[in-house]
Image 1 (spheres, one colour):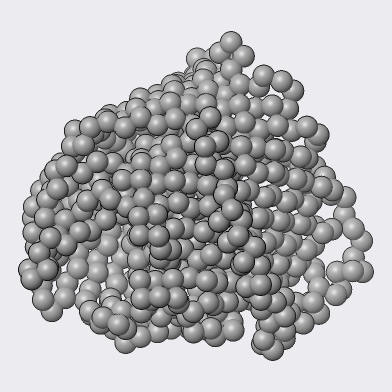
Image 2: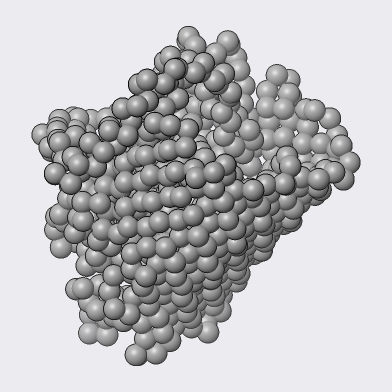
Length: 637
């Protein structure tokens, strides 16, 4: 196989060994923190103390955990070869994660950098891939590409109305097409099931923050659905830096016959942000950023072994920036059709065959462009021996603007004994240029380059997953290696006029280690830790890639000392970062949270974000929020 030509060389291992002292120092900060964190830890332990007197309950029978991102079909996580993390919405709610950014920050291999507080743009760097090389799949369809990013969406997205959140790491263009070079973040609007239920929550706190959400799900006579609506307002920490948002989601499904299911989803987000700009280059202005996604789908299942799923979707993104110098408007509309056919047992294999068609319309300050793409893909999963799973797939995408790109992937996992899984994957990826890359934006001084080609990548990983004590303890370790070529880079062609264009020039390599562990003790204490070491380099210039910290660690502990109480704490540490101007300071943040069920289904919640009051910047020049305290009331019905 091709990856054997580039095994992890001495430089990668020397980088890991040389980083050990800094790693130890960062863990010391986490394990032996400053006095405020010690006080918080003492309080948590004090609350947990009575739990020792409680009788231990019988452990629950573990149920298989299924993921859908790894093969585009439900697959038992204990057998999948892919490196994938499935986040539990119940766990995220108990830990009082305030938004999608905070939830994703605890995933190994994933780093988020935000240009300021709530409402600012947020970027995902997954296994060191560039921010535009991670793909968001929402309700089964692609939500972003090189020209229409997810950055404003992620900067303020909440978790209301979701029932599935997965992060799939490594090149995934074979399954999902362009922009999936680093991996995929999959979000699904909640499905209605069981009797009617819902919740109402009201939150308030520091920085004049006020928010409210209402959500409901249910199923009646074969018709299921969900709906959620949220409103958020905050002043943030700087003058003229406020943010307001309205967000909603809904799904309705009708099982017309035992063989036919029809459904509809809609998601929307409207945000207004007073942009303060960077402290290095102040640029006050106002941003209006809206996202709308609607899907209609049908699923035909004539027998237990075959299902055909057809999705038609429309995605609209609107971005308007107003400042003293004028107004800039970006508009994007994408119409999508996705057809997937799955044979659960085709000569002993699961076979997925499908196609995808997209039409994209872009408008940048009144200049309109368009693009069309079509793709076909084939993926299969086989079990050649007991405990062995093999995945393989091929895909071809064709764009009317830049031509075609072929990608492939394969993976294997082996479960030699119950609770132990060895796995490895190899895949290729690509990212097609955006309309502004290819056609330019003269108002911005960016010239056209009709010769642009897609970015390309190849990557592999090997890992081991281990569970103990009936699944109460779990460990995971993964080594990954990615090579990128034809990377997009801005080239200045006229220094006096300061004009230039995007070219294919740079090459890059990323490699690293992802470690994760989780444990549940007597159904009372829940703890997890995720650690990532990353070496990301621009091979063209022999320099490190910016905004890719070498080390990231995220720790969380939840304790339920009594049925009505939940208390917990989290720590997030980032070390060894560089920006274009040089190194940038390390930081460690802490969060505390507690909830109390006053009466059945009525909860009082409180949390403190950045409890150590750390002064830090995720992106140079953009200060993150200082310490903030928030309280909420949540009623479930």
